[in-house]
Image (tube, rainbow, N blue to C red; front, side):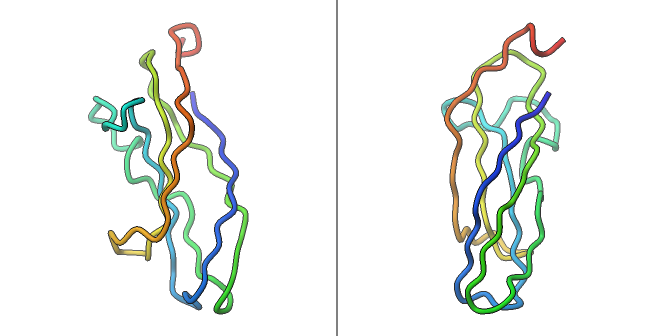
Length: 103
């Protein structure tokens, strides 16, 4: 199972500096998913070198979600590639994964 997201990303002042778009699946209260599966955290979904001093693009993201029933959200971050500095961060609304959708 997974979720599809489409979002507009805009960069100002990062010409030819690679940016990365990363996703995390979190519990409804913002905690890490209690699974040792790395596909739910810090997943690079888009590598983007902006063209020009001001550039934007629509990023299409498919993110896997846990098979365990529960309440989750997806966090998306834009960072300089290879850096932990967060340039932008958004979170989806909380969504439910029920037992019927995981089988």
